[in-house]
Length: 88
Image 1 (tube, rainbow, N blue to C red):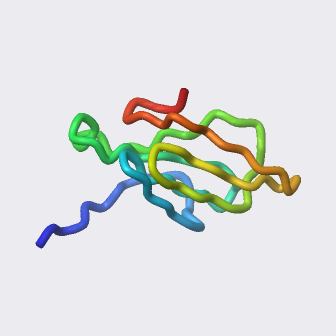
Image 2 (image 1 turned 60 degrees about the horizontal axis):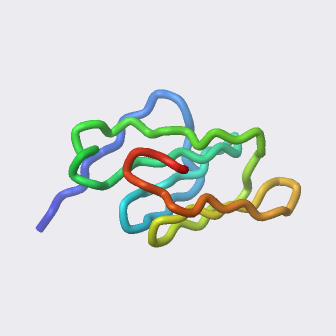
């Protein structure tokens, strides 16, 4: 079977993780969302990319090719059309 590959980071501490078709995303303890592409083109680069936002998030859901989150203000945000190169 396949073996997991550790994602090395020196910064954020992760609170929760979600996975979609082409990405895995994590919510950090400071309320930021980072995504890791899982497509073959990114397999050599395991650094997480922070989703650009001024919001602080408290919950995360990932599926298909989208990322959804609930902010500290209790409002939902969605990033549809996630691709292996980032959010559009």
